[in-house]
Amino acid sequence: MFKQQFNIRVFFFRHFKTRSSYKIKATYSNISCAASKSVVVDGKSYIGDEYTNVTPKILSFIGINNHNRKDHPLNLFKQRLVDFFYDHFRGRTGNPIFSIYDKISPVVTTNENFDSLLVPKDHPSRNKTDSYYLNKTHMLRAHCTAHQSELIKMGLDNFVIFGDVYRRDEIDATHYPVFHQADGVHIFTPNELELIHGSNVNIFDNDKNNSNNEKQEVYSIEANDIVTNHLKKTLVAMIKKVFGEEIEYRWISEYFPFTHPSFELEINYNGQWIEALGCGVIRHEILKNAGAGNRIGWAFGLGLERLAMPFYSIPDIRLFWSKDSGFLNQFQNLPKDGRMKYKPISIYPQCINDISFWLPKEKPFCPNDFYELVGNYGGQLVEQVKLIDQFTHPKTGNVSHCYRIVYRHLEKTLSQAEVNEVHKLIEINATQILGIKLR
View 1 (cartoon, rainbow, N blue to C red):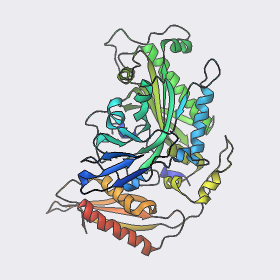
View 2: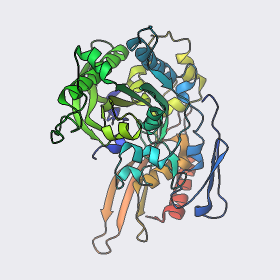
View 3: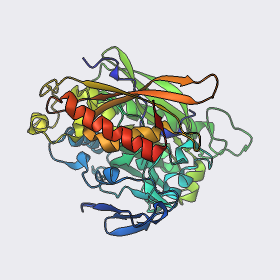
View 4: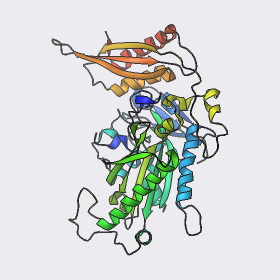
């Protein structure tokens, strides 16, 4: 049943491939024009500008924190990861050396989300079509790694961050504009490397020209290999702790702006390879800028939903937001190391409506804008939006798109009349807001 829905992309930095205990409250007020939008998050107001693209619907997710809700599957899965790091890494006194941060506000600066991680100025992840902006200088984090430099500057060497992250994306069973991540960092001093290696290790390479695809030029081959091996050994142990010793895995070389070398870990689950996480050796420039330039370290990131879905056999990412007691009750009183298979409350039929329109000539059309509009007006009723046809008129050059919108309620059967009403609302607003012309 869990089938081909797992066309899964790694949540660590899918954007970046080539290719506190308080509840946060958020509001949105449209004062007079687009440039005057005022966004309030946790009592702090952010004056809108030409970058502001966050919507009331997206703001409504702030403060829910499914990863911290008792008996929620994301919280249970998170706790498995926390237990691994607490048990696997202990100091001389027997106490855990990793600290956990799971209540950090999702509002970050663009410097924290991009610049501190060496993301190029022209990288597409910075575009308004890919990220949610409060204004030009502040945004909703696209990954929990946005807090990495800040925590290192505070003197922390070993930590894992859990939190909700926000990205403009397509809509289907495994994609949602709000999801949850775990991002971890482990930084080593020369003495710590020596304890691992058994002899003295020089972190840095005196030959500045000794750079290749396997390491950063500033680090010695020895130090790079020790940290890389430690990283891979740790993450394989974590995956085996969660999915079992017999889980099949493989490593894939990858590119991220903030780590080098970089890797993805894939696991074979039910006969299908799933990208489980991304990781690598932290760029020395990042550590240096954060006040830890005399050290070397690794980092990883993973999406909680994307691993919790196969782990609990949850077929649709929207279910993690369900308020139906029939969903959450299945996870109550689950033992600490317990595992269960989600049982569908009921299977309700799909309703499928297509929408075909000519793209506007006056301004560029972005599919993510349409996906978000559908999500805003269709809400939880929308299971999937997919481009099924495109056509260019041979004489006029006009371009037409046809999208298939699949509607399905998680808790009841939808009538075609109900769906048509929502679909009409989408048509009207797509025409008014995006400038499209219905066919």
